[in-house]
Every structure is written in C-alpha cells, then in structure tokens.
Amino acid sequence: MGLEELGFASASELAGRIRTKEISPVEVVKGFLERIERYNPLVNAYCTVAADEALAAAEKAEKVQMQGGKLPPLLGVPVAIKDLTPTQGLRTTYGSKIFAHHVPKEDSVFVKRVKAAGGIILGKTNTPEFGHTGITDNLLFGRTNNPWDTSRASGGSSGGSAAAVAAGLAPLAEGSDGGGSIRIPASLCGVYGLKATFGRVPFDTGPNAFSASMPFLHHGSLTRTVEDAALLLDIVQGPDASDPYSVPKSRESYRWLSSDVAGLKIAYSPNLDYFEIDSEVAAVTGAAVKNLENVGVSVETLSLGFEDGQERITKTFTQLWAVYYAAYYGHFLPHWEQDMSKGLLSTIRMGEKISTLDYKRLENQRSFAYGQIEKVFEHYDLLVTPTLAVTAFPHGPGPRTINGKKVDPYTGWMLTSLFNLTGHPAASINCGYSAKGLPIGLQIIGKRFTEDTVLVLSKAVEKNTDGVRRPQGY
Image (cartoon, rainbow, N blue to C red; front, side, top):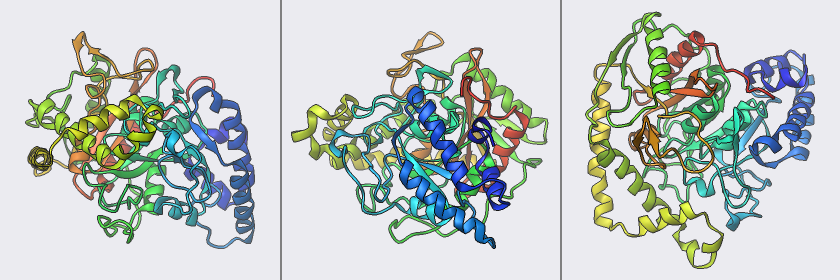
C-alpha cells in the first residue's frame, strides 16, 4: 500500500484490511509517521508526535492480528487526539505555555475507549489556548495552516485535527466542540465533523464534572467519511461515571445505516435569519439542498424566529463563553499574563465584568433559542444550514466584511454556536467548493438523540457530491 493510498484510505478500509491480514498495523503506523514527517511542517497539524509509543502499540496490535479470531474494531488504526484531551504519558499542553511540559497520568474516557477498541494514538493536534477561539494559533506552537491553502486558516479550535485528516496525516481524529470547534474546521478543511447530542459521548475533560453545560461542550470526531464517524461513535458513546450528564446508548451501532432519505422532511435555513452569507457559500449550499429533493427529501425554507439573533443568540453565547473562561482560567492572570494569548485575556476580562445575576438571566435567552429549535422539530426531521458564512480566509481574525457588509471578525461568520446553547446533534459535511477550490460545509442538525438521522442525511449528501477531494500536493 503506497503512502498516498494509505494516507487517504478511510479508517474503515484500513480496519478491514488489517482484519484480513492484507496489511499490518506496523506498516500502517510507519506509513503515517512518514507522512507526518514529510507534510506536518507544511500544515503544523501535530504539536506532539508519539512515534515511539505508536510503533510499540502497533507491534502489540500485530501480535493480536496474527492470533486471529474476533478482533477489536479499530485494531491497528491510527487516531490523532486534540491537545485539549488528556493522554496518559503523552504531553498535553492545552495550547498554553502554562502547561508546556504537562504530562497527564490518565487518559480521558474518549482515549481509553479508542485504545480498548485497538486504536493507536499517533500524537496530539494543535489547538488555540484552552480552545478559546475558532482559529488555531497559539504562543507555544504557532498556527495551523489549511491544507487547501497554507496561507489560510484551518479553523478551530480543533483545527489541528481537521488539518491532519484533510492532509492524510491521520484517518481519524478526535475533536471537542464548545461553539463549533469541530464543525468550523471541518467546513474550512473539507472533512466530516460530528458532535453528537450533549451527553451521548462522555465529556470528562473540563475543569470540573459540571463545567461542560454552560455552554454545552462535546467530544466528537473529524473523519474523511461518514462511515468512519459512525464507526468511532459506536466506540466512544455511552455513559461513564466521570460525567454526570452522560446518557445510555440509544442504539448499539450507527455504522450500518443506509443513505436512503426518501420521506425525510427538512427545514432549510439559508442564514439562521441573521447572518450575512458569502454569495458562493450560499449558492453551493443551496444547490446541495436542492439536490436532496431529487432523492425524495421534502425541503422547506424556513424562518426560525432569530431575526434579532445577534442580540439573543450570539451575545448570549459570547457572554456564557466569557464567564466560563473567567471562572476557570482567570486565576492564571497574576503570574502568567505575559505568556497568555491576547484573545484569551480579552475573553477572561469580559467574563469578569458580568455579574452573577446577569449570568443567570442569560438562561432566559438560551431557553428561547432551545424552544425555537424544538418548534422546528415538531414538524421536521432535520434542520440544515451553511456551517459557516465563508470559505477559508487568510490567517488572522475572520473576515470583517461579507458581500461588502461589515461583520464581527470573531463571531460574524460561524453559524455553529447556537447548537452549543441547545445541545442538539450537529455535523458539518463538505458539499462543494468555491471558484478557488476551497471547501464549503453544510451543517446538519437533528432532534436530540437522533444521531442516526443526521448520519443518514450525511451519507446522502456524501453520495450526491463527488466526495472528499484530496488537497493538491499531499
């Protein structure tokens, strides 16, 4: 199996070839390590590469492979883990100079389950400091470049994971999502990003056991195919005592779902009522939705009642986010301020100014947002929107104008944070490309605990487009 074929094979294909002994886990891991050595300097997706540990794990996996019998579903398949997620014995910095040499003593639940399924950890992927923003850049490792155009942003905060999958440096990657941190980079890098319903996958990596609810924080996946996301969801779903919000499984497996969407009713929101959408993004996402009508889906363009969403949605999310960072990371300021990202410092200072009463009152707007989305699902199976208002933009803050109109460069281009207020399952799937060849994502949102429906529609979109292209040069 050549390096190029290996790098862009799906995780499901690699797992199948390992099961039938066509390839060995050692061969697979060595191939990916060679690709990382060759291409990671271009994209800076990985901040830590666990070469020795991965090879040792591959040798153990090869022994299991040779024994035969029923093999773990991910045996020998490499997985990249975001640098916010603890990995036992492997440096985890949270993208911060404060934790530059931090080595956890225990794996997160997500990593434990991946390892138990036979997955091999290749390394840690880059993230902004403590995952505070939608751009992957930090003072410790620098910025992550978009494989489609290295002068442009990969998105964040799971930008390293998305770039690794897009560039063929990992078949699977873990991400976390508190405001779109899986879906944003998935859209910009042209891969599939899935966050399940809040609670479906245990979240044990916050500052405390209850910190993942304001807003809702999720572990999820970045993959090249929908099938791979379903495979990984099968492995990491289900309750764990470390997370008081985690819920029982609704189904044992999501992997064998069809792409038959005939009869599904979809609500289409072209802009969530209040975003300015780049004309190319609007055209490509609109065409993708139109194509679904050709395979039996009923589509209706809908207003969601968010005409004042800048105030009721974006401001609410931003203030909740700011208080979260002030509460859990503000104590670093007296001694570490000079070593912290400016954006993080601004977020903390914003949060420190919000009173406890005003903070609790934010729940009124959050409840309104949740209620409006639930009203949609009284009549429709799924809600579909563009993931982002733009394609990948040059490094730095986001765009200041879209279609000639002023927007907030930090929040005015991401249609994702609403679904961290509500906790619904949401995915971003590549649905086409701009004239410059940059990927464009379609966001698919389902009823709570209906990941199966999100995956079924995702498969239909995947089938009706030309799939995930390979960035030139990789």
